[in-house]
Length: 336
Image (cartoon, rainbow, N blue to C red):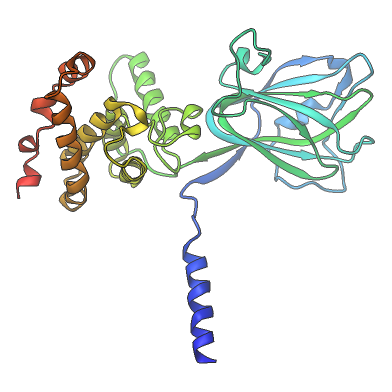
């Protein structure tokens, strides 16, 4: 009996500690303005959706926006959430006469993107992150959908003779709740805005892992491990676990002699980022943990340089200064 109890305890402990806890926070944002309406005579109470919400459907069914389609006319509405964000969409519905109304939602970083159809003619796609999808909404309920970078959202009623009741349409912003430690200020306000935009862009890319963009990053691992982005993290936010966490992930999913993401330059950038991360943070213990992989990668790179296929390599090597910048002797921490 005692042994059975111990086994059950160990099993529950493993299950408990095996769960992944999100390191980000979620904020719910109402739209700041309505940019455009289609068949506006079929839309009532749209301004209610600009008010702060609580994410809860209720039987009072007040402060409702109603969109009612006909067999020929289908209303639509385009929202602006005021800023670029990474996340999804929360839709709270009322009690329409049409149960489970079918709608479409399109998100975009610009008005033109949110208004652009995916028809194969204009280059718009759902690759990496869904930006255009069809939804069957609940009657008197809440639905959360999407995972992309956006600012604008368009909602269309698709069905004929259909009523859609919207209590709330809110953006779900997911981000790491961290302070801005670095700052920049000069007498040119445009440069000040450029700096803030760059810092905020990197902040958005600091999701569970470090991405190169709030759309393309969500589709793959390691694409965001760029040297300038990591330097921005160090300068603006100081130490953050997203950098070593991402560096370790791309290392662990790339056994040698494979290249990170199938591209030799990414493996070289990984080496340079390790160097700069050490220079910025001074964490010798973390750098020493990379010894076996890093030295093996360096040997692999050097072996390629001594082979006959230098035509494929000289461009990469010459612009990055490989023999000098990532030679083991140039990283004194390895010699301690």
